[in-house]
Length: 169
Image: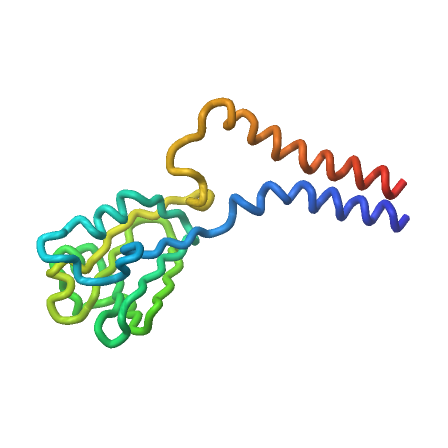
């Protein structure tokens, strides 16, 4: 009877193996190596490029690296984001690194509330979608590897179950 219970646990573990990688949250470091800074004069593309080059999914994490005491991160409504009105914030993060979990789908608006920083371009707007984490590649893999992935996801657990069955019985 103990062998049957062990086999049931192994089958359950094997079936859940492929799900482990699709539910992990991705971390996005805002601004990349530059961090959360005031963009160079006239460079309005730092954060718009960051937003355009990343796919944000439910439960992903944004990491804002900045000099505590010189910058912060606030969340804003679209109206206040567009006008850089940082006096009406929804949340404020004053200590770096600020780690913000994207806990809903839709639009998120961030800015630095220090004087003039938002109007100088230190603001970020992103769109969060539902679905698996953005650890998946940005471009689809070639057709051959796309067809092979489900086969591998099924073959490994089946092989695992077969070996466990031979060992236990």
